[in-house]
Each structure stands twice: as C-alpha cells, then as structure tokens.
Length: 450
Image (cartoon, rainbow, N blue to C red):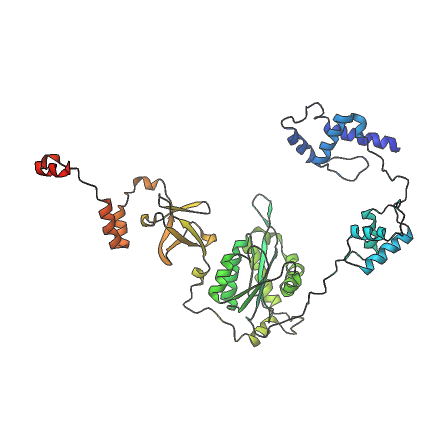
C-alpha cells in the first residue's frame, strides 16, 4: 500500500469517528457522553494493531477538523524522517562510561552531564527514549540498592517470640451473576518454627482482627507482632488489642519487603502449590476456599520438612513451644476484640453507627457513650458503655413500634440511676402554681405583693 493511500485511509477513519460531532457547536450538551461512547468501542485502525481510541484523541481530532478541515486529519510525517535514530558509537561510549561512574544519575541528568563535557556537538540529538534503551541493553537501568541498608538473616529461638503478618491478593470468588469478586489472604507465621497460626481469605481489611483472634486461640499470644504498613495494620483498634494482650506491635519500614521475607516466601509457596489446585467448586464462596486452604496447611505444609529448618514446622514447634503464652480460661477474647466508637445520644434517644440507628435509654440523652460491636454482627448486638462501665445493649430503632410505646417519665428514669439527681430534677421540673389573688389580704397587697 502506498504511503499516501495509507494516510488517506487514516484520515478517513478519523473522520468516521468524529462525523457525528462535526456539525455540533463547541460545548454542546451531551457531546462528551457521545465521545465517551465512541471511545468504548473497538475498531480496525488502518496501519495499527490497536483496537481502541482514547477520548482525548477523539477530542483532538475534532479540534483539528474544526480548525483545518479534512486535511488536518492527515497524519503528519516525522520531523526526523530519513535521519538515523541510532546514537553514534563514540557518544554511546561516553554515556555508558558516565553511567558506570555515577549509577544514581537519571537519564535527563546523564544527558545534561555528557553535553556539559563539551565532547558532543550541539547539533547531535540524544532523545531520552534512545538513551534509556541504550542503558537497558547494557543492564544499567536496574535500581541500585542504597549501601546504608543492612540486611541480615535473623530467627528467634522460641515459638511465640515473634509472629509475622502480611496480606496478599487471594483467589477471586464468583458471585451468583457470574462476576468475580476479589479477596485478600491474611496470614500469620511464627518466626521460629514457620508454623502458620492462622490464615484466611477475607473480603475486607477490617476482618483482620478476626484472623488475629483465631491465631491467638490456636497458637497462643505472641510476644511481638511484626506487620506491614497498610491501613488495617495501622489502625488504632489493632494497637489497642495488642496493648490489652501484652503484644509489642512492630511496623516494617515503608517499601522494605525484604524485612518480611518469611511471610513473603510463604505467600510464594501458596501461589505455586495451593492456588493451582483450586477447582471451580472452590470458587463459589470463602468457606470452600478456607477449607481447602487448611487442608493444604495441615496435611502438606506443616508436615513437610522446611528447607531452612531441616525438619517439619510441627516438629520444631513441639521442641521450642513450651514457653508459648495462651489465654487464661477466664479471658473473654470476644469482648476484647470488639470495635469501639464514641457517639453522642441525640434527643430522640438514638445513636447512628455505620448508617444504622440504635435506641438508647432516655437518661443518656446528650451524653457521649462508647459503642462496642463486632462489624460482622452489627445489627444484632451493640454494647453501650458510659463512664467506663457497661450500661445496656442497644437495639435497632423500630419507628413503627414507637408509635404505640408509652413514653418514659424522665424523673423515673433518672431516679433509677441516681436518687439525688431525681430530687433536684423534681424540684426544677415542678410547675409553679398560679397566684389566687382573692386570698391575698389588703395588708399583703400593701406590702408589695401586687
């Protein structure tokens, strides 16, 4: 195909895209919506392997057509057509030599430094893309690790000295309509034994605390917890739970994945050995995936010799797990892991939590209360605490039932909580009796009563 013929076909293709808009005045209502619809379709583009056109490109074609007509849609020739785009050998040597001496130089700084040396004529072009490709061919584009970062292999002696946790993208779960929903796999690993205290696929980060609770129930309370810098690991609730359990919470430095090498290596094992074994029946819900995951962990991973331990994780746990601290029989972990939120009770005796309204005792109107709840069970049970003590369990507001409920008298409610306040409230709320002027004597009138 001749070059002129290809240019005409490209121009005709571009005009076909914007033909519906050329007669509309600029800024017409609905124009951008039509362009967006055009950009969402697939096309056979002359001289290109692409099948889609961006919205910005369509708008630029429309602007060019309005300014210069059909000829403005013809593709322009390259300004460097006919010229070599390969750097001369002597210039390539200068660039490579400068990069080897100072590896931290970026491509723009490298070009500027070589030009400043005075060994390159001013008319010689050095495009950034060409210089980058030159450096890439010689392996000089790899990120240089700063020498001040000291990486050392470490391992604790006893089980429970350190738990490490991180999150990875888990297998997608199919919904009823056929669409897929992404999941996250949160896991805890014991540093000394490589035992997995608990791991589970979840849909939301807030379920991290449930995974930690199961890890504590199964393998005890760790002395230290080494976690990532994600929002779930930086939450105040996690810090509060660790403080109540006596766990030292440690956060990894940002962009320092090497510090979490043990959990990252286990995630790699999951990707290579577990995820390929999942079938379509496992993708129906999280429970099926969790059952398959724990079958793999208990029957294969925990019972296979670990390369760095030279024994199985369970055998190492049996040897060094005598100092693990487990929860006391009287500890209520369910209550300890509850979320907490503070709310002010409104005049209609209600508080709002995550879009749901709950009814509180009338005596707490205007007071700030603490709501303790489990996010997965919200709507069933909300504990209300005031001044550090449990007051009641809040219930969802039933607006229709409240139409037929007799309102409580504030004095009775206050008297039940504090009799002294009830006396003061009765005195303040007692209505004043109207003055009966017929019973006032003339002497009293003269004394200034009237």
